[in-house]
Image 1 (cartoon, rainbow, N blue to C red):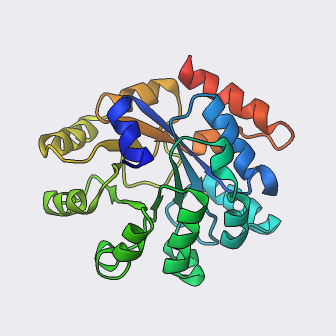
Image 2: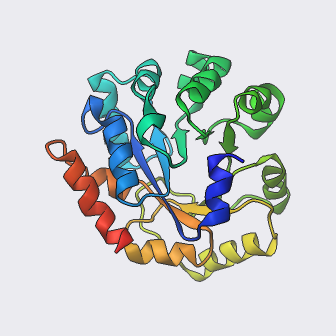
Length: 255
């Protein structure tokens, strides 16, 4: 059983934290992972930056630019993660856009993930049919979970297809906006989450986009197995006190 499946069997109200590799300082990637685990995070999503992050809001965009300007690349990221599993035991996903993955080579990317102990990937702009027909073999051979995204506009037929291709969890976008927007649980949002629940999917679900406080985290957990916090965490990282800023942020969610 992989780390992701084990986590969802053992815990409820799972707290996943996203942050950008190489931000706020180029060498902070593993130190942030270690401090997040110590501070109570259940799951990590490490973003590999890209120059055209179309789904991201201004906070994640700015962190990506800082990381790229500082010299972050996928090659460097895998070098930074080579000893990850000596100090980090919780599940770790890499999240980013398909272009850097293609440039690195998908098979090489999957092998590198497996070598450093990454459990899976979230690649929002990787078409499902391309994953299924071209890349699913490389993912499976290297024990990687591919996490698919669902939006309020996703059809039930596509959601069932995603459920059949998934072996970890399904990422529910709270809205079709970019990252960093506050979660607003309107009648429409509640109806969307209820539609997902009524499908009785085989895979657990996590809600992301707009989770910025303990209140919005708790609210999301009413509809899913947990929630993902990204922009709010990245915004609070301080370059001159990375460990302290991680601890202070996590106190809010784990109190």
